[in-house]
Amino acid sequence: MSESTSVVVTGLGATTPLGSDVPSTWSAVLAGKSGARVLPYEWVERFDLPVKIGAPLAVEPADVLTRQEVKRNDRSSQMSLIAAREAWNDASRDAALEVDGARLGVAIASGIGGVTTLLDAYDTLLEKGPRRILPLTVPMLMPNGPAASIGLEFGARAGVHTTVSACASGSEAIGYGVEMIRSGRADVVIAGGTEAAIHPLPIGGFAAMRAMSTRNDEPERASRPYDKGRDGFVLGEGAGVVVLESAEHARARGAKVYAEVAGVGVTSDGYHITAPEPEGEGVVRAIKTALAEAGLAPQDIVHLNAHATSTPVGDIAEVNGVRAALGPAADSVIVSATKSMTGHTLGAAGAIESIFTILALRDRQAPPTINLDDPDDDIDLDVVKGSPRALPADGQLAAMNNSFGFGGHNVVLILRTV
Amino acid sequence: MALSEQEVLAGLAELIHDETGLPQDQVALDKSFTDDLDIDSLSMMTVVVNAEERFGVKIPDDSVKDLKTVRDAVDFIVKQG
Image (cartoon, rainbow over the protein chains, first blue to last red):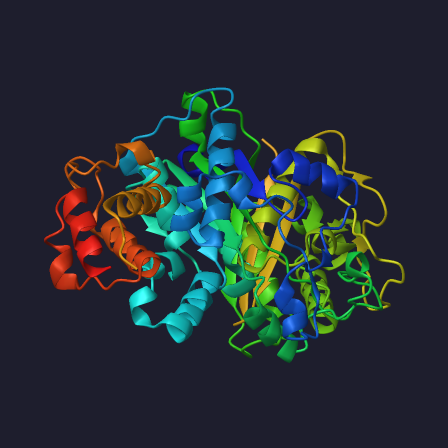
């Protein structure tokens, strides 16, 4: 791939169940902490929901933003604004990030969009009538609201986009941002995902699918990817945002570079609305596409941040796909399932986990997978348990981040040290 | 119960501050919503919706366009209230 089309990551930002920014989140991940707890909201008991646990943000957006920013943005948009500001400041740390607005793009995803705004407004409609619905209701509930808010904040005029592919959304947004730079539409793209869906309706819906863990007595032990006792995912919320930049642009301004986004693989199953295709055919093609783009062989991948949501069926399907795509080289990949700590942040997950993958490469250590007490016999990958595992100390490293979503969406990103 | 001009002005100042972040002491009777306070149409409608609820009045859309200054709004609400 020519120098001009190489895309690098120069800034990271996040707000998660584990911390209000990237450094606090990452140290909690390395320490193997869980962000899950019994949800402290009155509606949990009011509706007697079967699921009473989740992984809410560690720090409320209202503690960070102005009152007006809170009032004018859906919670998902508040979180992505916090993450985008951190990412932009991070990208400016060594050298100010200056870019013509016409060359700056945004790709910020959400799986569900402004669902709390929508449902709260519906409550207002029922209780007080249509005249009490606030005029900002529509711009707050629209799924592109977070992307648009960030676009406004930074004056992005190269295009503001929202990829929506359920739990693959955040990774797909990063992939879309990479394409924007490769195709010459932008030099810099603010990309990532956000999700704020801890509300009785989405919880009721996921619970109706029997997709969520009901280990209500032990919230910190509920998200347990690959463990025999796994019984579904734990719903988290958060945002992850990266600054993508053409390598040329980053070098010209003397920016610190975290990693290169070396390969993007996006496929769809065309199989079932929610069930993963059991052989993982779509996953295999996504991995192979990403490898080919990166010019890498299976044995070059040292680390995988797996999608692994802790559902009985999904975890196995991913492992089958990884094994089929990488062949014998799958044995030497060091695998982390970080949703064991963050819970499943849906449309933010791919972005937050891309950040974890990048930091694993930077620190040359793979984070642990917690709660893996009794590994499923069908999981034959080398999963990191307990404490972080060292990655090779020397040479260029490449790692993979998998994200899959309801609807049969498969997104694989390959990141590489520079 | 009748609302006093002072009560309505103070309440409006609070609603405008909530919506825009503008310091409440800048919301004076002679200020124009658009020219002085820089309140766009969406923010104006938000203030109207919240004012209806707070003061228990109805401000029809046809009347909103006539509310150019803070005094216009205060007078309208006092008369309705």
